[in-house]
Structures are given as C-alpha cells and as structure tokens.
Image (cartoon, rainbow, N blue to C red):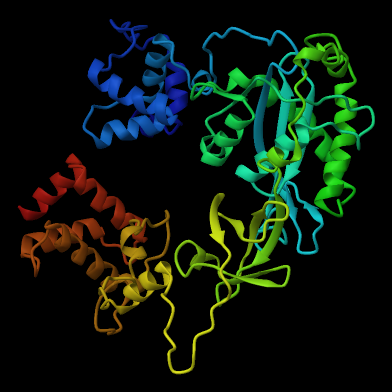
Length: 509
C-alpha cells in the first residue's frame, strides 16, 4: 500500500524503514530440531536403510501414508543424530580379522566374474565393446559373453585365471584341471598341485552334485564364506583389478579365438606372479616355490581327471529337436526347457571318448541326455509334437475375448493442466462455447466470463438483474479486456477477496 501511494518499489520502502520498523521477536524454539514421532521415524528410516530412499522421497511416503508433514532437512537431521548415512549404508563397515594360510597349496580362493565388454562373435573371434559403446542393435548384443574364472593361492598370492563361455559346473571343472595340472606348455610357470581346501562363495556351481562329488573324490574340502561377507575372499576379488588392466589391451587388437585370449592371459599372469606383492613384499612365484615336497599333491591319473575335464562343443537345436555331433543325430526330449531353445546355439559337454551321453547347458544348468537315434515316424502314423509352454500361453491369451479396456484418449485427462493465460494476452474467442454466431469482441468476452461464473456457482443462469449490474461494474465500461483480467477476478473470488465481494454486494444493492 505504501509503495502504491508513493509510486515506488516495495523493496525501497523496506530499505528506508529498516530503522523504524519493529524487530521480530526471537523464536522460542530457535535452534531446536523439529520433532518427528518415534514410530513414524522408525518406519520411514527402514526405507532409507533397506531401500536407499532419499529424503524428498521419504517425505512423499510420509504424506501418502498419513504420517504427518515431514521436511527433508528435518528428516536428514534426525538421520545424522542417529548416525545413519546413505553413503555409509552402501559400505560394509563391520570389523574383520585378516587370515593367511600357513603354507602354499593349503587354501585356494576361487571366484568368477562376467567380462561384460567381451563377447563371442559369429566367426569365433572375441569382440570388444565398452559399456559406453552399447546401444540398440549393437552387433555384440545378445551374443555369448565371456566369463573370467580366477584362482589365488592364499599363502603365496600366486594367481591363475582363464576365460570361458559361461559360468557353469563344467567350466569350473575344466578350470580347476588347468589350474592344478603341471604346466609344461607354459615355461617358467611353476604353480601346480591340488589344495587341501578351496574357499569360495555360495555359488550354484559349488552346490551342484557333480562339483561336490568330484571334490569328494579328489579329497578337496569346500569352505563357503558367510552370505554378505565378500571381503572374506578379498584376495581373489582383488585380483580382478589386475585382470581388468590386462583387458584394456584388447581395445586395439582383437582376439581371433578363445584359445588366443587364454594364451595372452597366461603371458600376463607370468608378469603378475613374478613381481613383488604389495602385502608380502615377495613375488608370488618366489614364495610359492618354498612349498615342501610332502605338501605338493599332484593331480591324479587321467581316469579320475576325466571328472574335471570335458570337451566343449556348440551346436544349434534344429526344429526336429536334434543336434548333430560327429555325424550322429542326437534326439533331444520334446519337453521344457529344450523346446525354448529351438533354432538357438547351446553349449554341449561330453567326456573324452564318450559316445553315449552328453550334457546340454541351458540357462546355466546342465541336463544329461542319453544317446537316442533320431526317430522317424511311419506314414499315416504322424503325431504332432507337444507345443512349448510359452506357445500355449500365447495361444490362451490370444483366445481371450477383448477386455474392452480404454486405451485411447487416456493421457490428456490424467495429465491435463489448468489453462493459465499470460498477462495482457488478447482474449481467445475459440475458448467460448457457442453455435458459432459472430458476436463482437465485447459480447464474447462478457459471455465467456458469465459462463465461468455460472460454472463456479457465483451467478445464476440466466443472471438476475442484480448480478447483471455487478458484472457491468467488473466490465468497467471498457470495450476490451485481456483474458488475464477475467482470470484475476475469478481468482479473487476464490480467495474471498474483500474488495471484489464489496463490489458484488454493492451491485446487488
């Protein structure tokens, strides 16, 4: 009011009156933290600890569940008071005790990881693509990814690793065979021999019957660390960072095959194992060769090692549910999950010289298949094979009647926002309902305003004589008004403005 009276800006009035204006009294609760009910805070903090919900999201959760009005800053202050932090929640801060084996080959730590940047191309080469290079229809999409298996001796820190196509039981068995055998084909690589214990996580491969049975025959005990305690096998976990450094070399050179990739990896392992370790200060190979002869357990003869060594082949499952191996057609069962992999390449394992049994790997699970010659049905006795479950499910969905759900015009209604006219914008005649009769600008503006008043219940239909007089006072005798003018009048009515109501009463009088 003072700014309008003196024709100046509001901030200027505040500036010149700062010495005469009364000072605000100090709040009694200044510096005190706004309280949150204990039960509500306990429920909300559960989502922060378990789900990593941010403070603004927690405030929306509190509002939706009638837990009161919670401010993000207040909620964060309560979290700090309780010693809870989202950044600390992502870290494992539990204390731990380091351990080390007493001698080489007493304990081997084993782990696996998926090398997402590598894939097996159609021509057998190993392709590379960084995470930032992926996009829709990228050549490497939906192609087999390369799995990296690593083994580290707990005492000497000697490291061994190999690339495989998949993370399954036979890949682990073949890896252990190469890790424990005498490596005469790699000069200067002394690491060999079986351990007394292997330390790993609770992987599905470790729980498989084939793996546990093989370890039982070889007298190697399996130790699994507790769930959620990956630091317990940190020695082998830490080895992956060395291998990731090696993988960068492939950005400028493509491996021609998986065998070449493993050959280059063996050359890199020779470098890693012959340089001083950061913890022990001794090269892993130099520390490993101190193993006493009585503790060196060589791998058993070839008959028992057949448990660990399998031949790997890749074949396509034809539409007649057959795979061809060495000129023989193996008939696969007409059931799930084999039916889901028609016309797809799958991994097949068999023991050397075995011709009556194979193992088919589907979704990282192995299925034993006995040799059955491809069946030929006689003329006139044709029977259709069973349909896959997903085809049956699709047919059942297609056979249903049209649900009749509303699928058109569903977005505008849910996401409609109120129309707000800009200041001084000319009146939009297209927003006035009617039969299209041409009316002058003043009449159309007045008609639209009356219709809006009737929609809000502030005017009768048709308007009374008193309401008509009040409307004329709002028009103020002008021939044109911007639409924002009428919008302001409607907003004043909604807010219960005294001036506009007095004019309304005066018009009715």
